Image (tube, rainbow, N blue to C red; front, side, top):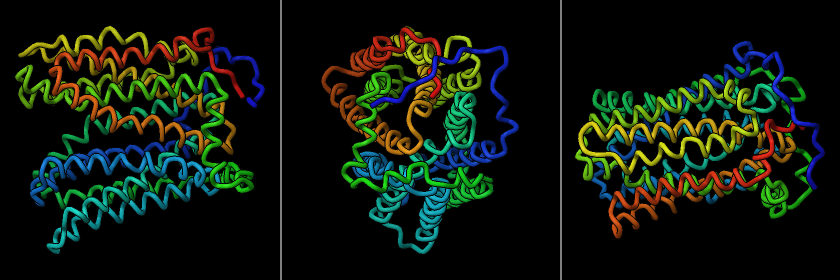
Length: 426
């Protein structure tokens, strides 16, 4: 049964209180920014370590990506139960310290001459499990650290951290690997997770905030608890539409992402400098969208922006398969920047809606259900893109992918969101 809601909140003359005065949020935000940067650096260092130091084959390197995403399929639902039953801040600190230990073990084992591909697989897999636990916990904890009318701004700032890490991570990671080698680069990753754990430890919470969000979940069995998040989503038409939209978008975005570098290099004859410029444009699109997310949400409407963010940038996606050799490759960058802006705006608004509509004691399991389904589409999309490109060619596959990405907007456009301006306040 759904909860009764108050009338939709209209944008008033006074905006929400500034998050710059929220000590707890600033600590969370700063820690997450450093942690995201460390994650992006390791995303470059791990495959290079496998390729250069361990002489791994292309297939063996691809298994690293598979193992990084596999925990979302295997552990998302149990992670939601755990996040609803324990102190989420302590769980996040435990995950950060665990990932720190795993990252620091890599250079130590490598310097001792004992690093093997199987050890690297183990580190990537275990780190992925801890990342799933951390992600579910922090997305569930945020509504207890900031006021309801600050959620859009808070989610936007966290989204900006991800885009900043995407922008700076490649450059910093490449420079570090060039200076000290791939193995020693993981010392910086360990430091990043330590900083994140320290900022979480410094957060001051009231006794009510320290209590688990849903002690009542202990009264039900494990199987029931694992499916309660999915059951809640099924009874919320808007959440179901958002889930379908996100999953479809993830599938086609990963399909295009699996071939985009090959497309730029082989079809457009792009240099490494131009490829780097394309991804820089993409990250800048997300940064700008994150900076304007709160204002756009108040102007367009906190509910309406969910479908507008998915539908409006769609025509710019078509520039990606229309890109041509030379500086025409920047058309691909413009299309990718439009998608990054859409992703930030949509994710911020959709996450805020989910956090507002879901009972606190169920939020961990609802977040986990979203991760399980949405990110479960990621490896399938990558396989689809590669298989389709081998049969139809790169440009034809890209046309299918960008049209598929844009079509995801239909799920939220033909939903109750189309008749709403602002989110209902629980």
